[in-house]
Image (cartoon, rainbow, N blue to C red; front, side):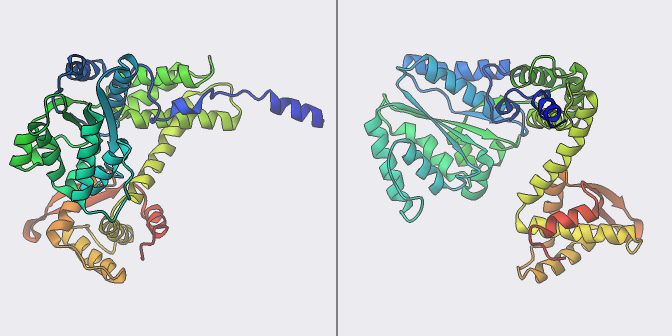
Length: 397
């Protein structure tokens, strides 16, 4: 009996061949649906082949539209196909390096300059970088991913100073910026002086459509799953649902991985339509939790205030969750957490941010004598689930 069990366990069918491929961090050799953007970026960088500085470039589009993948794909091909190119490519993610100091620290490290992560005057870091740049005697292409986070802290000053470098450099040196932004109006929000100095060539990344997402999923399935272990209709369902919601390839890939894991956990021979549907629901809840965990403190407190009011509405203790009512509840939360509250105007802006992140749904209530106001109609999670999540993060209810 034990031998039969061991034998059945050993021959249990596996679906996943390479889980690495089923993560958005993996960059495949081809990027379905981004041929136009790849060609445009390749053409911009082609000036390097004749030892000329390429134009500054901006990638703009929502998260999950292939911006980082295209940047790494094209710069990776240049490094591989032109090993003697007199160019150094540097990639910096501004979600970690979100100040001018941290970016300059990363630039120094990329040029083999050992400096401490804090404690140096910024001017010293800058001078060390410039000395190393001259000694390197190559052109630099610096990719600043999630540059919105840097500009939010720095106000665009670093973009201004780096984009102005080329005016003072000798002809054989240059620094080209490639900035990747998740907001369409990123450039418009820069101050006029920075915008005038920077002036990048723009490459737009629209959300993926259903056929493109299906191509991406099919490619990942062929690379990451064993042959014949998935239903093609399951890929179509994931692609259609994600295209309808967001066009986010990262989400589609996450759903595919989750569906494969669910199928393996069940000991199934194939990833089916039902596995795809289960995974869509599970990944949605996980994404909400991840989004909430990355929120700043005051965003969490406002979300906690809405959670309390949602519970009160369910018990018919309030009729509508207006901005004014949210603000009063939020001020109480801030007092409990012993932090000074934000202004009513700022809280109103944060409500829009929470809506943009898919955490709440807002409608306008034209309340007659009570006046017009924004009203929260729904949350991404139930009040009990949201309270449990926020409580685990230290928010006091």
